[in-house]
Length: 212
Image 1 (cartoon, one colour):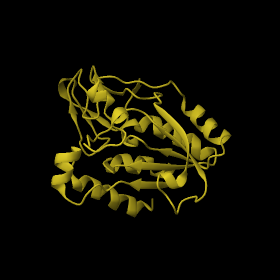
Image 2 (spheres, rainbow, N blue to C red):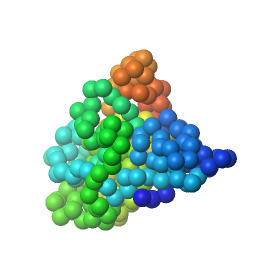
Image 3 (cartoon, helix red, strand yellow):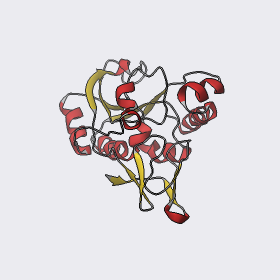
Image 4 (cartoon, rainbow, N blue to C red):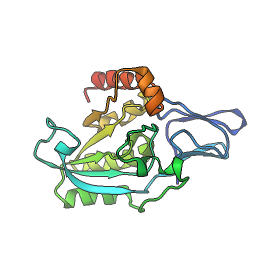
């Protein structure tokens, strides 16, 4: 467990999480929509730091990215959890585990170990994928810092619902992103994903501005 980044402390031990565009107001002892960030005594904690649920060596084209380090391998990682609840999610068992089963599992793997494994397997990139990298932001950020120093690039495979603050914070170490724009109707996002279209579109605009 680690104190979260990008949140505000409010009166009566409440907090406001600014990690994604839900911007959850979380009472003491409660969790945000993602169910992996919890308010304990007026301090917001991430519950998935160093809780690796999946790791694989994939071709970068599987992300899918065909213009970024083509022909190379990418070390792909994830924790459980997501800030969406898409009813068509292909990784539902791990993305919704914290909400559906009230459970957070995963192997304790330090950021430097991730980078070492990526290097050892000949990967040129680390891909934060399978679930939603935004919700394991602190873990991903610490990995990305070390990856950049080791000469590796960092890729987000994301639903695009991260906040502008999160995007600008991560940007110096974010070299590529595949944003899954699931539809172009707000109703679709509200009914089938549990989000809003505009939050995704805003992230796309910011990524364009930042040159991601």
